Length: 322
Ligand SMILES: NC(=O)c1ccc[n+]([C@@H]2O[C@H](COP(=O)([O-])OP(=O)(O)OC[C@H]3O[C@@H](n4cnc5c(N)ncnc54)[C@H](OP(=O)(O)O)[C@@H]3O)[C@@H](O)[C@H]2O)c1
Image (cartoon, rainbow, N blue to C red; front, side):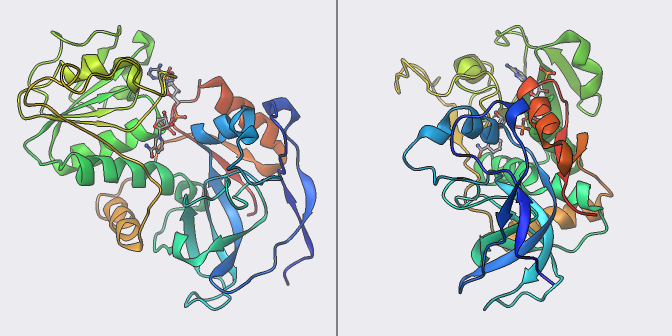
């Protein structure tokens, strides 16, 4: 039985983590082209922090809004889709938690084309740690960087959920991986990489032979990353950990070294094919996502505080129902 109301985080104004609370909210009614998902768990993302603290004021954000750009759960009402009630699914992006209600809730009404079936033995917390992180890592590495086993991959800002996923995938693919952290004491966290180095802001001269780079620190270090690379190398800017969101002073002629290629990845368009590839990869290689910290939904304020602190290494996951 689907209840009339559910617990959800409902935001209308910028909200600090400690003020985030669960409220009673109507369970959305299904309509054609949308399915109702019973949320089991969801992973947390940097973009949700930005939305909650400031971006919520933007005109293109629906208000009130239930945040959350991804989730794992079961189909509660399949509507006019080919899903079966009870089917295990994940959902991500496409406006989730921004232009329509997202995953910080017991139920989420989601567009069918952004809901994907999953076949896996991972538990709900582990499944919830996969969609956004692995889809982004996978797309950055294969769609954008055309990663090949003979590549030497530089991952800049690797002590994040995305960095761990990228190391895991690239090592399984046969690549050599050089991973960076800006904190010396975090070097042991990068033990899966072939080489871990401390990022002082200048890597040029310290990194040799990198043919591909996944830039997770972002515009703050992008120029330096481009200047670390071999001729013919590709750099994919995917992250913004450095807190600089625009590349001010970008000069298309001088900022990109001759013979180095620059691309970027945006995770807005997941497909069933990619989600299948990712879960298949995890099964075949017997890998699990790196969980940083797990919270119960009743402690959503603490989960948001952990996200805002930027001190959790690995994915923050919130369990909504057992
Ligand atoms: N392009 C896309 O579509 C897309 C999709 C998903 C995520 N992203 C972006 O990718 C990045 C990683 O995402 P995530 O979810 O994996 O992040 P996350 O796990 O929340 O990252 C948190 C970790 O990042 C590290 N960090 C923070 N500031 C840093 C800095 N200035 N330099 C280096 N490391 C820093 C911290 O580790 P320390 O303890 O080492 O400081 C922190 O524990 C984010 O910027 C996110 O917005 C982009």
